[in-house]
Image (cartoon, rainbow, N blue to C red):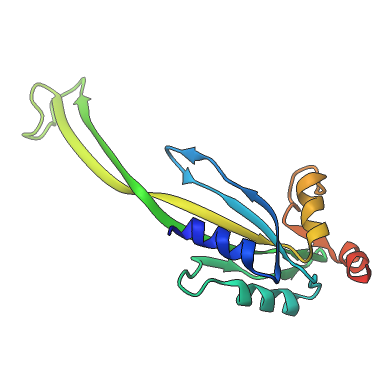
Length: 173
């Protein structure tokens, strides 16, 4: 089973997790595949310590995330959501081509240039990757509002955060 399938199954079946949204992502020649999961604790967690503990509990043991971004409070009094980043090889990209260099002035050319012209062929192989993002929100309602109502500033800066003032309102519900 692939990492993506394992993550999806684990997030769907964990009784402590609310899987708010799963974006299946897109395949791109340059960027690979980029699916996203938006999740929240079923009971809601409103402190950095509580939500960071929740993030530790939901990690799948056989697949360690490449990067973990913990919940933090920014100076502008915003709680930035935690994120888990996973990478998985899903194929190989094979490229080949020919490069031709033509110089107008061939006075200073080395022995590889013939009459100011140099040709070379090349082959390259690199891994085709899947980058999986798991966004962890304090609760399901906050996650849905960020996704459905686009509640963030005009420049999109705060998509992955909430003001501490607003967070207190949700914690009381």
